[in-house]
Length: 229
Image (cartoon, rainbow, N blue to C red):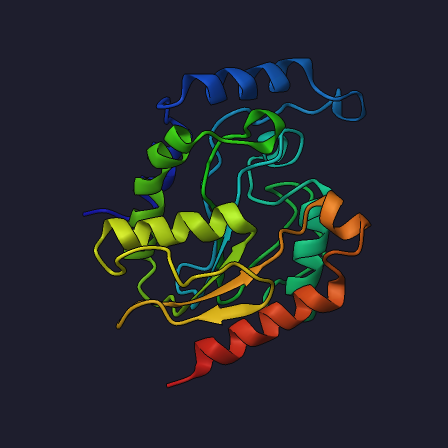
């Protein structure tokens, strides 16, 4: 029997992408000066959250000095500061910050994962690397049986989820699914709704492309969509 626990173990020990594994190990060895006392995770990062979640949040990939350091999705960097702050204000997270796997954070009705499970150089996984990770996302979707809404943070996450649907025959193509912030899409009968959002990257938040108010509205919309009959 497959389970989230089994899947998480397989992800942590994955070696399908040599370039990503080498990059993560190098970052974990060299470290950033501010984190020189940290024992970096340096491995693929599994998903995190409520196994009964109705909302799946799909990001791009672990940050080199964020999740690759802490071992938990969106933990320990600016993107996570914005994301978990918004999840706390909308009632999905038990606290507004995420700094380590042992900080006591709990998620309610939300599960967080990513299109790529290893930190890529320049935050750019290759198409082949994304394809290597796709079966993990497919298994998560199969195991998280209560999911009714997928929130895709950024275009790559958005396209990755649509690629899953296309590979499974749920949609014919990605045509007609035009990425745009806070846009909601009906995908296929029996499949979760899809909501697109700008990624809470430091570049997007520092330029004002994505504000806290904009991200809060995404999760309010996701909650409403998850509660519909």
